Image 1 (cartoon, rainbow, N blue to C red):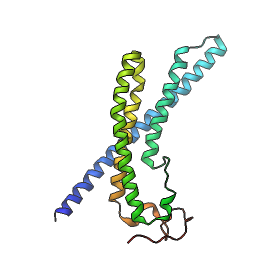
Image 2: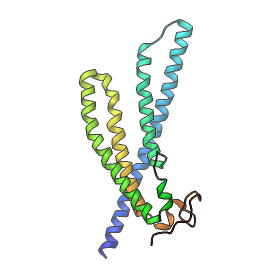
Image 3: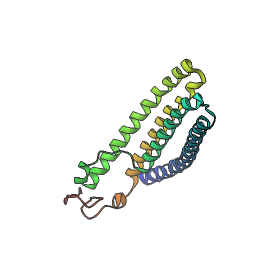
Length: 189
C-alpha cells in the first residue's frame, strides 16, 4: 500500500517537473529566437553602416560573440531536453532493455551531478567577471544558467526513463535495436 502511494507521489512530482521543463523550454526558445534576430539585425546594421557611411560600430563587434555564446548554450540545453545531444551509446545497442535503462539512469545522474558542480563553480566565475569587467562581465551569467538548466534536464531525463514502462522505451524493434541494425541480442529478463 505504501509503495503505491509513494509511486503516485513520485508520478505527480515528475509530472509537475515536466510541466516546469515545458515552460522553461518555451522561454528558452523565445530567448534564442530573440537573440538570433538581434544578432542578425546588429550585424546587418553594422555591415550597412560600414558600406554606406564608412562607419563601423566597435561595440557591436565586441557584443556579437556574447550573443553567439548565449545562443549556443541555450540551444545545447534544448538539445539535451529533446535527447539530441551527443551520446556514446554504440555499445548499448547490443545490450538488453534493462541494461540500457540502468545505463541511462546512471549516466543521467552522473551528468546531473557534474553539471551541478559546474553550476557552483560558474557562480564564482561570474563574480570574478563582474569584478574585473563591471557590467560587461554580466554576459557571463549564461554559464550558471546553462549548468543549472542542464543539471535539471539530466535529472528529469534520469527519472523519466526510470518511470516509463519497459515496452514504451525507444519504440524498439523485436531484438531491442531502435534502428534495426544490430544483431539479435537477448533481452534481460
